[in-house]
Length: 390
Image 1 (spheres, rainbow, N blue to C red):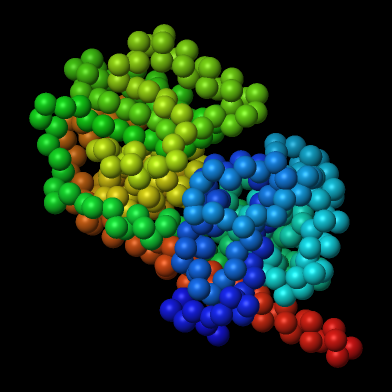
Image 2 (image 1 turned 30 degrees about the horizontal axis):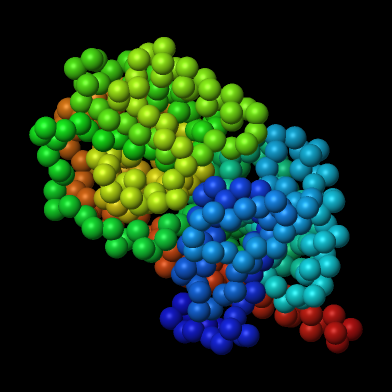
């Protein structure tokens, strides 16, 4: 079998179809798929199943296949099921013409498709979220044709699913290897004559808890707040609740007179440029699965402030590579911000912070996924041979 260091001719590369159903190219899962493509470009041919209205805005480019009924996420399980039922015929026709393609599902909307497909072919499903209905996912793990990936040990505990060779893997999301080329300072830059720059990256959606950050900054002593320059980068999704949340955030800013030290700057296509000017990174969301933006910030040698929940507790070394605060606790987050600005906490040097996430880089995670793809492909070829012989 080929490895990452053994390029194969294009016609012989493994074909992998990533089932997402997404409409928006907004990071997260797509950052992971791009990183996997970067790491396995010489051995795997990646394609991504999306909604027909998907608009690709980031680079490097992905090969996409659109379906007008595909869906990625919804709070309504009925809507997810209906979307899967309506998109199923198109997906089935596609896979009939590409019989050896490895199927890798990533979203809740793709889970029903993965379940149906697993009755006839080996399927890989990566769980990227903390869902409330954990029993559904424990049931999916038991399907004979399904191979499940959970992102962190804490996610495995949340679902009550134990790592099991050949059935359940714990495998991190990943960031692109190019982040490791980011130039690191020899030491922490001096704050003399300038403000402490705190940066966050993420969609303006409620579960990201940017409202907690706004309240925490409002709670800072005036003498500390005047030393802070905080900027949050990320798009507002087109749904009504996200737009309402953005309006609430901007009202919070105005009511607390925080515009001089806190800004919501909209989407960015160059997150590395954003992080180049940062002194630290902030991620206030609760139950963040395995944040790519968080890993990118650590790969840049930046200390981070994140909630003590989700994948953060497996990624951030509290008191070393960053500081963890109690989820939703405004006072605790405010105290952590103060500690960084005032320099009352001693954290690891930039090089050590970068090395803390080396095992989550595209090269390392890509090699693990290549093994899983090869195993799924071998199972599929065996099933095809058995069917032909019968």
